[in-house]
Length: 309
Image 1 (tube, rainbow, N blue to C red):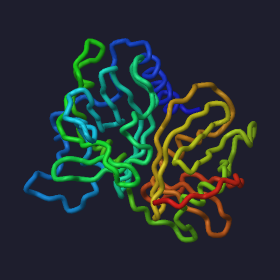
Image 2 (cartoon, one colour):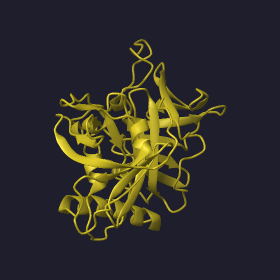
Image 3 (tube, rainbow, N blue to C red):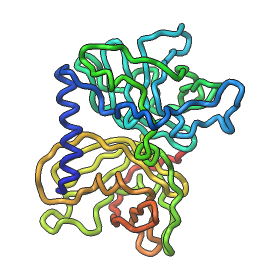
């Protein structure tokens, strides 16, 4: 287990522990940076070129008005280094993925002691975001609107949170890179991996730890969730893959037990694309420059595949 991985997982674990006890902390969003302007949607007299929001354009605080209800000040959705929903009970937070087609996937894993740590009823598991003038409409997979998001919401102030955590996040270079979907040029002999391919198999490192050759793996499910382990530390989250192989997943909370194995989740979290070897059928992890990071070998799972939309 590397030092960087230990630090990342420990930080996530401490956040979950402290917020659960109600101490004076906030979610792990970055404080405002005066050198980085907050993202803004198109103005009313400047129609967006597409109804689908670019991922970096959603960064900020958004006031939530539920469908069929009047505007209220008690729900604020925050897009930053993670997604945070502020409500009367406090907050819940976790990872999120916004795809080029506007699909929003979430993975809530921490929050205030009084808030259920799960997506609220108005946030569908297969949510869709689209512009409507200068607001965002949050709908389900059938295009039924669930909420309207208006830029500029202010989370409720409380002695349990430092002010810097309630300010609107800003688009830093690191955050922009994490949100951007890269188009990776695949090396010769490789083809873009697909959702169907990922679902058909459980994937094991081609070069496992000799002390635990079958311990580490990652498994994808049709609801765009994954589960993974390095041999003794399990984690889970959300994932998405584009037709060209561009890939993202959220980094869930994990334990910190030392054991033999392969750091599966860190390998997948840092890659830009997944490909398959046309000759061997191996899953190939690639960085943004198309450089191979690792290879995984398949074992059939028997999961019925689901076509990605």
